[in-house]
Each structure stands twice: as structure tokens, then as C-alpha cells.
Image (tube, rainbow, N blue to C red; front, side, top):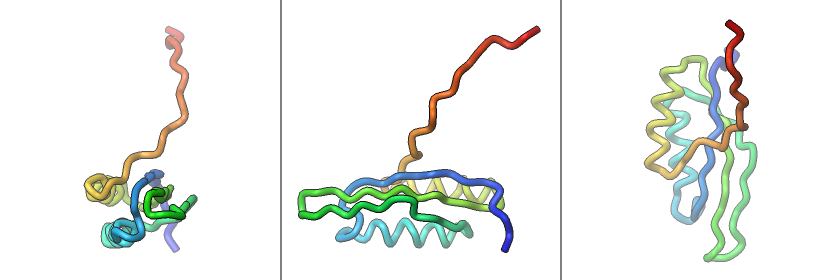
Length: 92
């Protein structure tokens, strides 16, 4: 199996099961020739509770990953919060 060179973690929150959104998200990832790993999936216990999913999307090509991410945004996915970086002046 080919090693994934590019990856991005996305999150989705809402009524993911009863609305069929989770199924559409996973279908779009596969259609985009990417693979996925569900890192966290919490299902709401009542009709008022939202579900939450954190999904790592992987691809051997940056273009495929970007196109897949572009398709997932209208379905309610957003990029997972990245860790803060520290910036410092360059030596020179």
C-alpha cells in the first residue's frame, strides 16, 4: 500500500447520523481518492445533542487532498484547530 504523503484533520459537528451527513462525508473522501481514519466520533444521546467527528484524511497527492477538502466544507467540515506556532526574527 502506498504511503500517504499529505494529511489533514477535519472536524464536523451537528446531527451527523440522522441527517446522513457522516455518510456523505465519508463517501466524498473515498470519491476523492483519499483514505481516512476516524480519530474521534461522539454520537449525541438525545435529539437535541449534537454529534462530533474528528477525521484524519490522507492522500498521496496534495491536489486530491485539496479537492476533497473543498468538497467537504459545504457539508459542514472545518479544519481541526492547529497548534499555535511561535515566530521569531531570522538571524541575518
